[in-house]
Image (cartoon, rainbow, N blue to C red; front, side, top):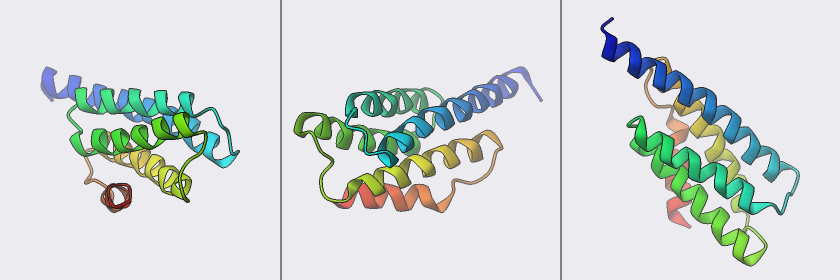
Amino acid sequence: MNEKAATEEGLLQSFAEEAKRRCDVISAGLATGSSDFETMRAEAHALKGTASVVGLRRLAELAGLMESDLAEAKKTGTIRGGRDHQIADAAKALAEGSAAAAKGEEEPPDVGRSLAQLFSA
């Protein structure tokens, strides 16, 4: 393995670990009914930026959609109509997608499903 490939692999592995931690924060907040939407939004924002940096465009897009919903929830005080489950599903898909990328595997189908769900509403 050349140095560039090793560096990319290391970055993807670091992102997978970060994504798991950040997605766990989002999922836990949603599961407990937390109204700390700013913390969850900030986690999604960080995921969007890091996914972009490591070249995972679809995961960055997914994190951006999550961030948008959580920013709206911060303003209104609530997540609109059942989207908390969709955001939680998206967080799980994002963590799985980053883990797959770190292993050099194909993107899990849940990433595309979550993108479609969050885009549609």
